[in-house]
Length: 412
Image (tube, rainbow, N blue to C red; front, side, top):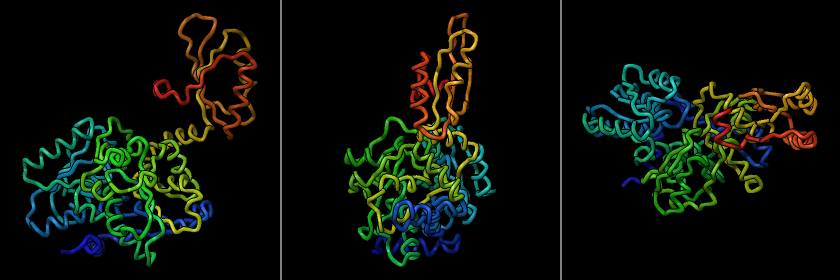
């Protein structure tokens, strides 16, 4: 029986008729910072700007080899998997039905439609992904179609393993370490299945969707009660059954939980310094280097940048979260006495690098004090220590709501 590495090599070879291998690029900026040879495997440069078309290609290729007159293919996705399936439906000349949540941004819907053209039908249903998934699976059963899982399928895992096949060929050897995001686990299971113990691995998952860590603790896949969808390409409520079978023996220390706000600082850095556009999940591997600093010195490390499908309408949110994480932006509710000159007194307290980014007067009735929602940006987090000391000395009453999730969501 053909073993997994041979299947992965066969999948990678077949892909060359559809798209070229993605680049493996040395990053001078990161290499200098960490004292290591840092290489980026640029999956954000595939035709659909993510690695997801690899698994879709391999699963569809094998189904069509067994059943040339296969009925429709069906999937459920709000992002990269939908685009990969759409692209491959058009490539193979088969019909596809792609179920997407009603809340899916128009940009993702239009890109999916562009990649699939007349080969696909998009069905918008369900406010939440679980509802969308249920509808897709029900439709698939009804028409006798083929459901294409985004990760929990052996053929999909095999297709994602082609990333490792390319890395080995491009380096002429395995690297010392591969750093990659983990959501449902298809990519990491495939890469680890191909390279085995020939290199070390660091898997990074968003703190708001740490399903692999939860599964390792429990010894079996478990469903998270809540998922933060900011890093939607990797925020999965439950790791796959097939993928966990290949990842369950990972050491807990090799699975990192990445703060979403810190992740935003990496996204901005890669955009501003390197000119590389990464979606949140695509930046997880680069951000994880911060937790590996000092342990990878002198090593050859490959970071898999898994996707670049970033909607620039989200850029203000990314900047906001990055500034808050870095401590250079804060929000206060300030009680301002109702007397002439009170506002001037406050403004005189601000330092030369303190900039007012938000000012909203919240007085609701004829009281002696009114409340002001104020956002302040500065160039050094230490400036806020000085500012707050001056506010205390001047007798101003204020509350820092930057980390108050409920208030911040309501007011900001």
